[in-house]
Amino acid sequence: MSRLVVVSNRVATPTETKGSAGGLAVAVFGALKDMGGVWFGWSGDVVSEAVANAGPNLEVDGAVTFATVGLPRRDYDQYYRGFSNAMLWPVFHYRNDLAVYERDEYAGYRRVNAWLAHKLIKLLEPDDIVWVHDYHLIPFAEALRQQGVGNRLGFFLHIPFPSPQILLNVPPHEELVKSLCCYDLLGFQTATDQTAFHDYIVRHVRGTVGPGGQVEAFGRTLRTGVYRIGVFPDEIAEQAERYESRQHVLELKESLEGRKLIMSVDRLDYSKGLVERFRAFEQLLEKAPEWRGNVTLVQIAPPTRSDVDTYQQIRQHLEYEAGRINGRYSGLDYTAIRYLNQRYDRLKLMSLFRESQVGFVTPLRDGMNLVAKEYVAAQNPDDPGVLVLSCFAGAADELTSALLVNPHDITGMSEALQRALSMPLAERKRRHQASMAVLRENNLGVWRDAFLADLRGVPPISEPAPQP
Ligand code: GDG
Image (cartoon, helix red, strand yellow):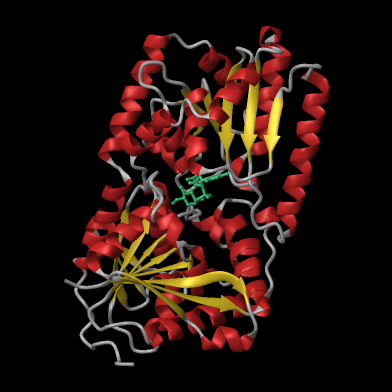
């Protein structure tokens, strides 16, 4: 059987791959263990040129090799902080207004992709199948192909693929799409994303889209498919139940003094709709005074990408909103919004989800949103909480039993909160059962195996990869 090579911007740590709650790193590592292979990418460290060039650093764990490289400061700034996170991330989340384009950052993005590809080639065997993850690595296959690699190359995009009119805002949009066409298989989270890619191919580069998502463009033929990422719901349910009587949950319960709890967990990112969410909660307290002092919103928001300006701005904005709303509605013994800028242990999060009556997940755009799925999975089936979910999360296609909201409609969201807080048990159970059935049918293993099966099915290019 072919080996598997996984390439992602960040390589998971050994602890993450052995975590018991079933995250993405665990699922990817599972496939690597079965097939044998390599997980290659950035170590997360900024290092000197000499140290970067001396890499990759190899760590062997059974049949799996973790191969990581550090990035010099300029590469980090241009490839990661610059083009990936200050240009591609905002535009792919429909926030052109926040995007910053610098030609030298784009050049750095391509240069780092080529350098990473060059590093990987030395570890690659001719029959390996290569699975590349996410927007940091769009030109990775092109760089491999230019260096003579004929292996099967697949790419999964974790974030939305924007509609063509939005993508046109990225000056080198055509080069990026051409680079994507160097893969053999492109995976998207939803049919909307796949269709947006197809539209671009047909309208802007006069390519063709055939049955089964086959694309012909730039002289290449490739497959495209929809692979909805999921969770392992039964493991999460079991973990959440096992942790429900732990100290942290008991302390939270005691501090709530019988008040209802709304839970939200997101990386602190402007795509997650946090400001609109706080305002919707404020409107609930304003328009439904019976809830004042009787419901608390816990927002866990660990900071990310804090050296990108737009992330500093969203953080300040949220601190202002949380302070303003708490100033208005908190009391001597009651805090309306508990806003926590910290990362919590995964198992703790799952047990807090189980303890709450509402999961409030309202991104302005999101490829999938795993928090929504984790929230559902963590519920007690005999007394489940209600998921209030943005229609702009990929997860909304599947979790149709959630209360779906438009995150720009503050009043609509506050009404959904009211409805969720007062929903009768029978309806809550019915919605929870329907959502759990969807999560079980399309769990994280199904996502992984479907993508890999399709990638294996791609006929290899005739020339073998050059030997190191
Ligand atoms: C990208 C796409 C797509 C969050 N805070 C803490 C914590 N988390 C965990 C959650 C969840 C994960 O991080 C976040 O995943 P999401 O899917 O919600 O969002 P992104 O980070 O934006 O992920 C997204 C995903 O890729 C997968 O394809 O769904 O659309 O944007 O698992 O639980 N985990 C811990 N402490 C925290 O404080 N331990």
